[in-house]
Amino acid sequence: MLIRVLFAFASTLAVANGLAFDVDIFGAFKANPLLTDFKKSQFGEKFKISMDIKENANDERSPRMSLEGLCVELLQEKAAKKDVVGLPGANGPHPNSSSGGKGLDVLSHPSFIDIFGTQKVRMEKAAWEVIFRKDAANGALILGFHLPAGAKRNDAHIDPGRIYLSFDVYDPERLAVRQIERVEAEAKCKEYVQERDDELDKYKTTNNIFMKALHYRNAAAAVEKIDLSGVRWLSQIPSDSDVLPLGDGLLVKTAGTIWQKEQGFIGAKHTLLGDAVMTPYEEQAKEDLLRP
Image (tube, rainbow, N blue to C red; front, side, top):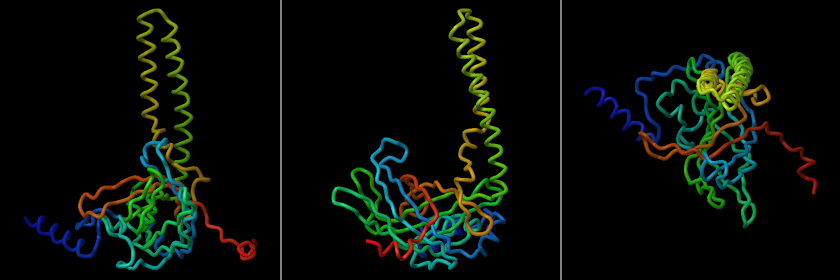
């Protein structure tokens, strides 16, 4: 009964503060120690981000909308609670694993092209954070925005409301170890694939029913070795060319995802919208801007 009362109190408090994420009144998740130094970093990093929105994010053939030209600057100052969107870490169930919400300056808004020409998409109330749980393989850089009008091109669209961009974040030392593991797993996997193919060829060419059973079993064993090698998970580990420095002591993967969250409180639905790619922001020289 006491737990229910405490949970109800925490839920009421969160709703009153305008938060839309689940609340962890026990603060069970601890932060990665790297976040301590990261919070002291002097920011000002600027990134240019391309977004690929799909009608169905899990279908590569789905109608899509490309948003180009979003440029942001990560600020060190804490985000003002009333003027920015809530963040899944700082305002969610495990705030202890977050760097805290910080200001995000939108240097330029993205746009897309439809039959009427170039359409600007306003992204407001921006904030960012890094979520990194202790002992986790990686964390995440989260960029949050509010879209007052949404965007639509054919069947691909973004509804008005909150939108989030998520990019994996790594400890450089642990990433280097994972990269070695990936290379080793890929080499082993190549051997297992060859073993599987050889056994399948033998299965097809032999007329001996007992040998067929043996080669089929050997091929199945090779497939199991592939599954157990961890290569499918390790294939997500980025190479050095696929990461950028983030603050002091972290690396961020340039490829990320875009998702939207409903305004509900407990159990609010997450919708995957598409993919995002981050590159360093390069300011144009004044003479380039004045050139006709």
